[in-house]
Image (cartoon, rainbow, N blue to C red; front, side):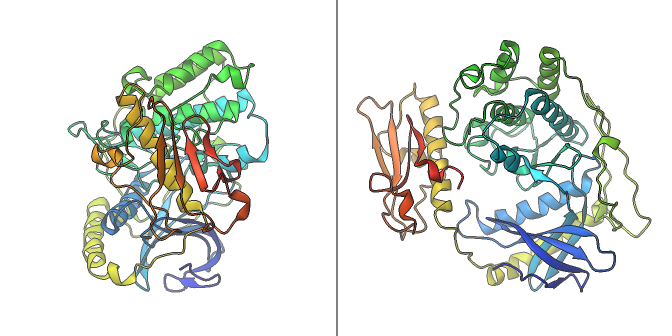
Length: 452
């Protein structure tokens, strides 16, 4: 259930002015700080049973995001101002970044983004990612790079938001704990049994985004299958096409070894140089005057590009990083006891969960084919049996009906569709008697569902 507009939060410190977005783990609100009139963002933890993770994992992801943002000191990343609890719910308060998401920018026009602009944005995103990979005790792998998580500011600068599934790279681990990511942008290693996410995971996603900006091709329609760039946009230079193709290799050993190697290759073949950070990221909104949640102690590693940019801090009482982690542990213990009573199920957006399930199944199918000489499984259950997906989802709007699956006699093509005729309450989306469906040859159909 969403917090109502006008609700006062955190001891009457903030007033909710609008709902910015809804997610599987809660809502995001625009609030106004009553004392100063500043706009801020408040992110809420409200677990949904429709999400792909359990309650404990949702809670861990929520607090880990707060921990990461508290460490950041870079103009391309948001600032956080603390965590508070109200009516049994947990909230993170963070900087409001004015602008449009890259997804909104892409949807505004039928034409690709001009090469110079797309390349500059990717260079600047590369500098932000390099900061994450090289400025902490271990590389922070972002893992969820997609247009919806990139804000283009009024000064035409990209900034990253939403660090819910970011994680430290651990060279001693072979696989990820949580198999999370966005189909179309997530690299193969983000799925169970295919290795651990690492900085090259972000190289893949950044390459996909550059591909999409230059071609308008939607990678979520056919995960891990990319047509020739020049077939979609003949004006793209051959050398740049080769650079992008290397970045989006499914085999991570064939990709660029780092974000900076990828960035330098782009610069070399386009002649577009790095844009200075710092003042170029200044916001037209006046600086916020809040006490940071923490002043963390961190051991910087040598960065191959820009150093962290100093940010002035208000001279008020702040927690040390150790104190912050103690508080997080206490909150987590409290949450474990009270969370089941406060978590409630949110109504699903009509059809959205079904489309997401089908995209996830399609992604798992393509991974299966990669491991089995291009052939798809005899049964859909093979995906869960062999670890390509934790469990087979069902459409939440059909009363748990299983998805229908057919495979060609040579196992080179398949179709997955929802059997729930009539349940999505939108007669315009009926496709051959079922709602909706994905096939290897056609991608997601009908087209009216592709942006859901």
